Length: 212
Image (tube, rainbow, N blue to C red; front, side):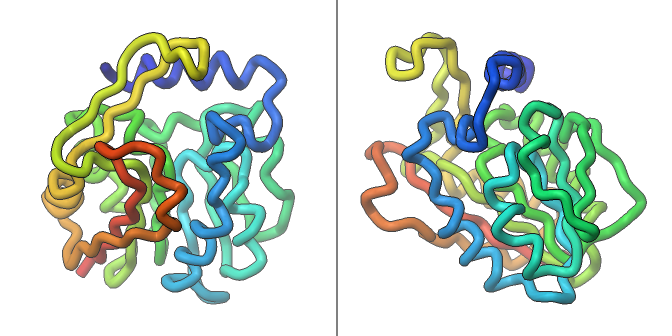
């Protein structure tokens, strides 16, 4: 699989009158309050945030008034139209793999996005976004990861009634990938209640790492 397959999946979703929770694939997967609570352990009113693949703003809309500013990168305008309009929120409608900026940020957040890139693509993205983190800054990557090995889903989903593509890499591999991009002091956190994890071979984790 590669990101073009996942991009096609979300492009189809975007053109079919999505609501704010559409990007969660299944609406019962909206655990964004847990996400925000976790982010706020690393952010405050002085924090400048770069949020990658912001979707419909489920996180941003709960976070924007608690940080200095947020730059939201989201390819699809049919998703980003749900993001709150506020003086400290900038929305950039661009592919996250092509996004570029001369600004650096205290915190970069990647929530529920990296599973849609294969290993090679992900390594390039981590290298790219390393440049956007201030010295002393932090990156948080949250998503489903393989518990014991890589788990790749590619093809027709009976549950979703459409083709679906994700690569849930082994948790230790994802940490190695992040650190190979230049980040240090990676830590793995289990941030959701047990009942949020539906599958035995994958698990939601957040990886936090720093730029020295």
